[in-house]
Length: 366
Image (cartoon, helix red, strand yellow):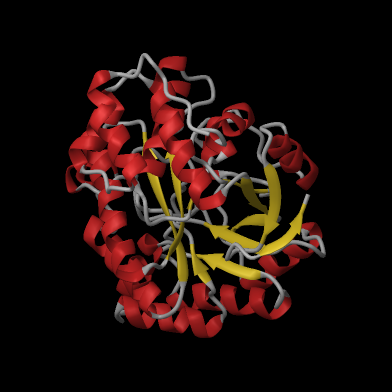
């Protein structure tokens, strides 16, 4: 049953008609949604789209995040995780050391290892290949989710081979999916100011396209809330939508709220709950060819994540065990949740929790 809101923002009426008619939204539509104060209509539209795709199903995974190195050649302005070689607190773990770390924390039902780290230019490409190989050999039943396009481009430079050959080598070693990090905002104006040492927007997209052509299903992100314009946010979504039209290789889109450089930073430096929930809803409306929009509790907190399930989100990520990147930047949220906590979170939103594997195959219904 559809509920018609009588106080709908008049500027949204054409968009409402488009959504209910199944028409694709434009850049101008996305910008208009962001500028509208009518968050209830925007949420209702996003919920309508999500219910058509997923009904009341919400997905999560039992996963574990690991960190191979925080040494990084890049100097991104939003990052407080990176270290220089030899700097106090820097680390670089071998494949064998990572295997041991995982053995200490992994459970028999862990489905995915999500590895995150820096661009450590003191190590050869074989170091990164060996990590994948050792972990896959030790945990053959667990999906290896590793290396963003930014890292793939970095490996290409240090190895002197193409990004396609980098991907082929890593797949042979056991790589099974790529995370969506390193996208930040797919705008060269933004990247020149915020992450000038990393992969370009087009390179990021091209590497995902290569991965899709090699059979990898991947993830996409957007890091919002710093210097980007509303137009750049929507353009970011449209570039992802265009590639998805070509390859159908993306499984999920993950909006990530930028975190302040310190946990003690003033509240004005964080994104607002209004912006967070609106970004999730607009993502659901713009990315009509993505099956899932993820509400990432690490960035927006558990309560807003729960609310997001009525604003277009159909995924609440996973258990994580110990998240470091956002928390190094000042996130105030939990570093991980248990399976029971995720189930409670989803049920509390009157949704059906489904435990999944990396590729959205259902493991168990709760």
